[in-house]
Length: 421
Ligand code: LLP
Image (tube, rainbow, N blue to C red; front, side, top):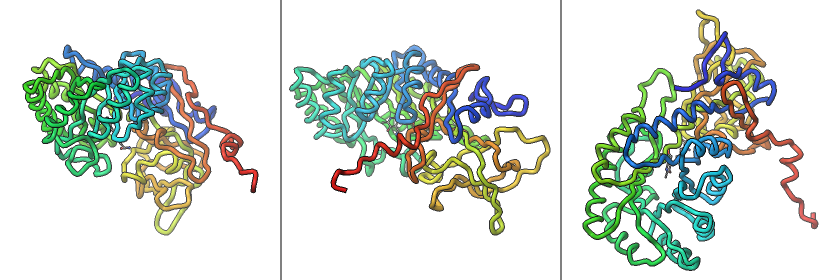
């Protein structure tokens, strides 16, 4: 559930009309609902019940520090994958002991920053990374807490570009080699093994792949303990999917996911960490855009809008579906009409939807892309020298610009012309 609902004929973000935000901030603009973000975080927190646990928000899905502060103040940890994300989390006031560091290519400089600044654990993804981290930690006179990310060879049954747990994927070490790798880790003085990590993919719409992976992790926990390792933490990754359309079947709920975790690993007495991103932020955000032109083509009508693929790349990159609705609610009984909804960028890939049925929309009117909070603003760019899309956070009846739209001068002055030109 989210807090983007029609009230008196117009779409609201909590108690703020989206049209008001569009007037004051301009379009395109991302708008997030604080109540939705908090609610989704709490659903996970509650789902893990009395198991000792930490919900680490996968901030790659939405990394504005206002959002991180909101969630961090509510008790969330963070899953980071770069020094930039680590620094954002710290800037938002999240303590180091609530930050886990994931990612296949951590550099030595990134390891140093996290060790010096404080970190809960590194989720190590390869042996070379393990040796590098050992070296960096020892050079600082420190011991780095680690889990090893295992690749359980499970098909997450999701889009190929966001599936990560099959043996041909670049992530983690094959679970079949785990005992050997843990043995090596135990011999390194700069590392302390604390647990196991797994993440099999994103936008999973069934529980079965999670179950297959978590049962393998449970079995591995027993094996590693028998080998003498102190396994006290299980990081079970993120990936629970969200409903992108109102019509299709809804993916499992956090409470069902929590029950599955309890069933698979609850008996082990480990502290459980999870790394949900999309389910917390996805339906907590919309991209608001204005129709520039309504153009009649050969047998089809185009809505040309001021948002483009540089602002929301998911449809172009993953053929992703986002519901698109008018900000002014259609009168009851109005016949929907098919539109190709496109941005102004000079390539055909800049298409959000083809032959999408929606109530008639006129030039100058506002539309909202639903479910755009996750992997929306964070994947935006300045392609075509379009200004970076701004972000707004709503809480109750108040809203604030949490990232302003830059000026053209700011954008252009970042480039430097060498003196010899
Ligand atoms: N943990 C790790 C190690 C991950 O790689 C990811 C996502 C997550 C957690 C969070 O997964 P979530 O709960 O958000 O599904 N840009 C793509 C999604 C990429 C996901 C990458 N990893 C999209 O727009 O669909």
